[in-house]
Amino acid sequence: MCFSFSTLSGFHRRNGRAAERALRIIPVLDLKGGEVVRAEKGQRDSYRPIMTPLSVSTDAVSVAIGLRTLFPFRAFYIADLDAIEGRAPNAEAIAGLCAMPDAPELWVDAGIADADTLAAALAGPSLCPVLGSESQRDDSLLKRFRDHPGIILSLDFFGDGFRGPTSLLENPDLWPERVIVMTLAKVGAAAGPDFARLGEIKQKAGQRQVIAAGGVRDETDIRALSSLGIAAALVATSLHDGTLAAGQLASLGS
Image 1 (tube, rainbow, N blue to C red):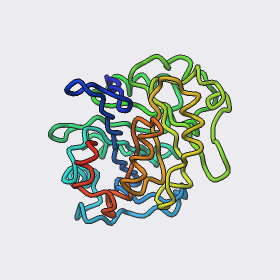
Image 2 (spheres, helix red, strand yellow; image 1 turned 30 degrees about the horizontal axis):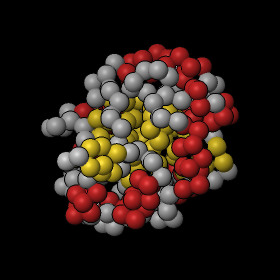
Image 3 (cartoon, rainbow, N blue to C red; image 1 turned 90 degrees about the vertical axis):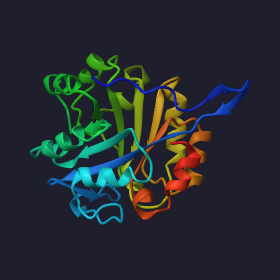
């Protein structure tokens, strides 16, 4: 099973003085047709195989290894776009990631919407199933599993607003320990994070860990998110484009 990571924002003691902890950066791998693709603004029909200086191949393991040349990332977020849209999942690619040396923790959104599939995912080593709000028919699945430490909820916002049962957005008591705020319109758009929405969700979330997704451009954005109390950020474009380089990642302590 997958266990919750420790609190990544706030303060810890070092040599008797308080020091701010770094926000954790989680690289994103969007999978479609067995390849890593480049996401842009949630317009999934237009996603194309990724072109990145970090890998000569679009193979998921190759791209993950390339990302680890920037920083020894311990976790990756996987969006299995085929599974989310009702097609055959990218099981081979995910199995390859699980078999990597120093295997990463995988946060996987595969469109899970039933209890049997979720229970099977939770039984897998190093795999944290992400319940995307867009895939949920109602709030029953979250009510049943919300206290499981491996569960992650993704509140999905498209250009036309929130997608999913409104109870998932309006009732924080349903939320598990980790909540992703996924703003699809900002993904790959270099437009900056959705700070206003993140602030609203953070206020409702209490002590839960809020994770930003969409729009992270550079070190300035990372520091601003950390100041807001965001625990982690899902990042792709800025890693491949070099606007978040190895030296910056090391200084951020990601």
